[in-house]
Image (cartoon, rainbow, N blue to C red):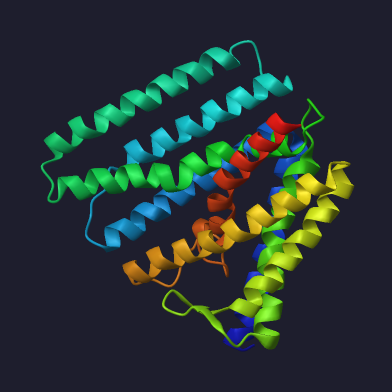
Length: 289
């Protein structure tokens, strides 16, 4: 068996497993979804710190990872309370997690003083950046399925899965159109294979998934198509941003957590950066409706 065929089989098998994990997390209930966000966050922050280390900085890995996990737990607790999926101590634990997050933020400076490492400014900056780049957007992602399913007060796995379809639809259609008719390079410096033709193909694909999502969750077609437009545009930026970090670090993949696909950031970069834009869009939609 050739190496190309072997890699293709590994990629296909790990893709099936990944999709199964996502489906399982969604249908287990809200806390299954929250656990998936926690996993993506912890691994993603670790991978970001590896990219930073490749540039010679020494981020405070464990402070950044623990702070990131606390932020996800706080956001999950808030949503769980709204959905009625929490337990008696959920609100208290959520508040405790937020307070601990702030304490760790201050502790980061104290630790750096006593670490006596080179480039303390860069070390602190990259530690905080791991939280801002990965954990903060995914903490907002905890709210997105609830906001996208405006008329429901219970967990609906299809609201989350349809959001993923917006992201993946953009990616798949951009790839198919790009390899078919792509001629005009979009950002050759960061991603030589991306074309403007693929970009517009991705937008169309995401809009189509938006209409499908509205049908599946019985939501507003206008809201979901608008959400698809927001997700499509921000997903491209998310992909390019991660490519920028990898190119600067001189690596092909952010990690090897998902065989055949690279790291967690490689697979969920578009989801991560799309989340804040989707959150703000859905907040405005919720207010207007």
